[in-house]
Length: 201
Image (tube, rainbow, N blue to C red; front, side, top):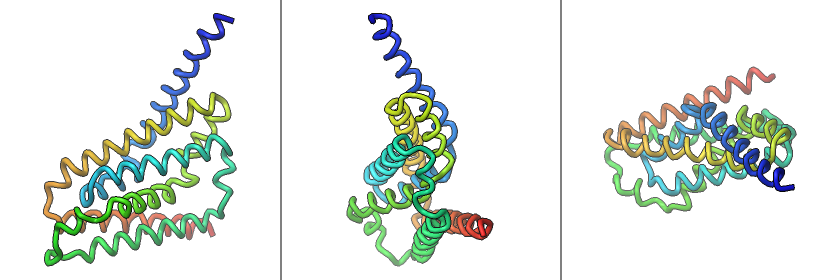
C-alpha cells in the first residue's frame, strides 16, 4: 500500500511532464503562438494571455473527457469556414488601419473585448487540431488530469512566450507596420483555411 502511494504521484508527475514537453514542442511556432504574438503587439498582453489560456483549458478539457470524438461534434467544413471568416475579418480590419487614427484607441480597448477576440480566434483555430487530437490520445492512455494539466501548462507557456515576443519586439515597429504585418498574417491564415476547406470537397 505504501509502495503504491509512492509510485502513483511519481507516475502522475511523469505523465504531466511528458505531456508538457510533447505539446510545447509541437506548438512552438504554431499559428496559435503567432496569433498571440500579433495580438499582443497591438493590444494589452493580459487579456490576450487570459483569452488564450481559457481557450486552451476548455479545448484540452473537452479532449480528455471525450477523446478524439471531439472533432466530430461539428462538421469540419463548418469549423474551417468559421476560422477562415474570422481570420479574414481581423486581417481586413487590421489592413484598414491608417496613421490618422488615434494610436491610444488601440491600447484603451476594453480588456473583455480583447479577451473575447483572443478566446474565439484560438478556440476555433485549434478546435479538432492535431494538438487537441494528440491530447485526446494521451488522455486515453495516461491519467486524464495529468494530461490536461501538462497540455494546458504547455500551451499557456507557448502563448506567453508569443505575447512576450509581440510586446518586446513587434511593439518597437511603427503601429502602421504592426497592423500591416498582423493583417497580412491573418489573411494568410484565412487563405490556408479556405484551401483546406476546398480540399475537403
